[in-house]
Length: 428
Image 1 (cartoon, rainbow, N blue to C red):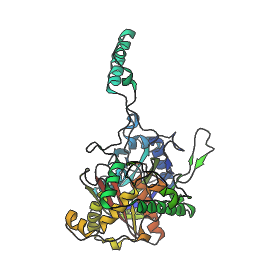
Image 2 (cartoon, rainbow, N blue to C red; image 1 turned 30 degrees about the vertical axis):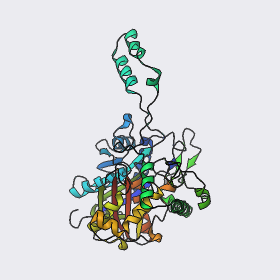
Image 3 (cartoon, rainbow, N blue to C red; image 1 turned 60 degrees about the vertical axis):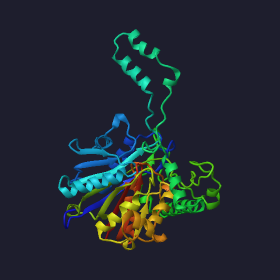
């Protein structure tokens, strides 16, 4: 980053996060993204400093809006000259959007950028077979009806079946859940610890909802077409969840010897989040009091066949070094909860002399105090729209730091492909 320059987070907002095929099932990722852009501009009363650029992350784009950011910017009423592009880094896609925005601001390529992400897992495109696809293309090219029908005569019933979306890593053939199960076994993360962590996530998220902390981030969503029903909080939070009920659930990914269940894993979720970013001097000249600033960030990649979701254990030391901080200097730590086993594995690696020496060639980071960790719950309770989670966590950490009078926070996100992202933010 340029010496003396800081990237400010001015404001942010998000939709409620809703379980897939539930309250937001009628909404596309474009609908979700457009709404948070409109709400964000309304909250900051943007007039003289409209964004130069919009950068959004998404993981499962639809062909009709493949550049989600551009379509959302236009749909939100931003000027047509507003540049926009879409990024994908699996579950860290909105983290990449934030990093790209910061780089653009500090390079002088843009002054004001909106960064975030959106995902509608209720509306995942369902592929068709290659045989049916070729028949449709041939029929479309034909001019006469017999020629249009002829390609379909070669099809068999199996060719008409939809192709289920792939949920496995291309490089390993394992699903993310199977990979997390592997991590749990290799790291000795037991079922009881996972269930206790999941209970903690719901308990903290419920408390943060009830006292209004999470509600400050959320724009109430009115359900079309009559707009009578509305949602103003994340609907995956279960206030009645307890250790006993979680312990009764059956394993999902390894039904015989597994420890991962639907209860200690994050659910498929719809939602969107966005943050307004600009240079510190620009923000203050416009009269804004920033939520906080980006201190540093780092990305990492590991062998997907080993521990797929351990990435933040590699990216966090780099981000801390770049920030000139130690783990003990942090006031808040928020790790994306893809699975309880994954979070507990990352925390274990932070404090492991063996891991630090063999994998990083350095001393361990240390232990994260419980009262600093995921203080408003996490993805297990709140939900995980792939393209929006990094922005959601960043917004929550910034608001909580501001509420506490300032300090430093870590955002850590694991991602498919063996990727990890870590961001250090500060607030005054």
